[in-house]
Image (cartoon, rainbow, N blue to C red; front, side, top):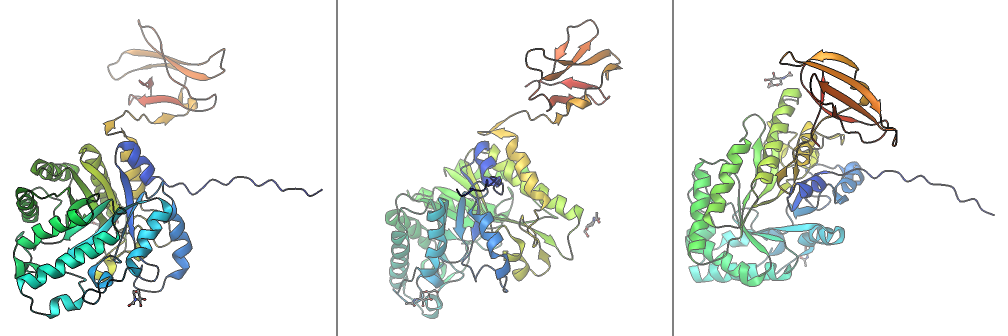
Length: 426
Ligand SMILES: *[C@@H]1O[C@H](CO)[C@@H](O)[C@H](O)[C@H]1NC(C)=O
Ligand SMILES: *[C@@H]1O[C@H](CO)[C@@H](O)[C@H](O)[C@H]1NC(C)=O
């Protein structure tokens, strides 16, 4: 007879971002990812297995966005010649893993196929090119894109329209046409306007985004959401109130949703230290809490989670460590800061989270509370269950009983600041 060895079930790596985000009321917490080989600007294949395992865990990331593969230069490299090899890599991964897919991006001035800008088009020609592109790509992915970033970064730094080939030839009409055709090509996808620097309530770009989206809505067209990319700076970041104010301004325009679509929080070089990581944690937490508190904020996507695969140090060499996992795959303090925000909410409602103290902390004796009133405390065992609990009694009042979980586990308390543990409401 063969002995079958007993194999202990190892705990799975515990992913938490999406799990706690959805419990708090969001649709998703996700991460962008790229084609292997494109993920980084230098060879880093040794990190792939660990990276892939973290990404694959849907409790960590329930949504993804292809960083590059669906951009024009990949999907229509030659006029009318579509190639979805790159775009399919992340889209197929999302389907296989059961992640929501944000599709990105149909009309953008950057990472365009060179031929689009190489010719001087008449308005009719460029309209035909845009229409073919939008129908070609959005029809191909029809039914698979939870969101489409229909137009990306149409605003300049001063909030006016960016002078892209599309604007130069067609004026603001190109924005309306893009949303119209995207709606026709994939009626089921939520259609987003997506931009950076539109997270603060009083910025000129926020004002520009509002004007732009209002213009499209006023034309009777559908814009479902505004995507705040959220490429933020640890040492100068918007507060939770700022984010909430901005999102409310967008919701007031009549869009049904907002989302943080490309979140990362860069840290200035050289090095990282506790202070910089604390600023970064505050920034990530402010985004998380603002999103929970504004019910139209459907989710948060980080622009890759692993520092070496982030675009930040490559494009902004004075900055780095913008993600949530360091190079050695330990987590930034921001990770726990985000989880702790989500744990405080249940379906958008704030719940009391009470720090748990071991039963040992229930030191018996008498004491005085902050008002100088006497208190008496004793540890008891429940006869029927054997559970321990802490009794606290104010003089002249009936005793209050603390809650317990298991025999050895916690008595739930809040500290009164004078060493006496007060039973807390549960
Ligand atoms: C399509 O794109 C892939 C990936 O970039 C490339 O390897 C392939 O050669 C392309 N196909 C054609 C027909 O150009
Ligand atoms: C970390 O670096 C920042 C910026 O240089 C500095 O202000 C801060 O004092 C440093 N913190 C620690 C704990 O060294």
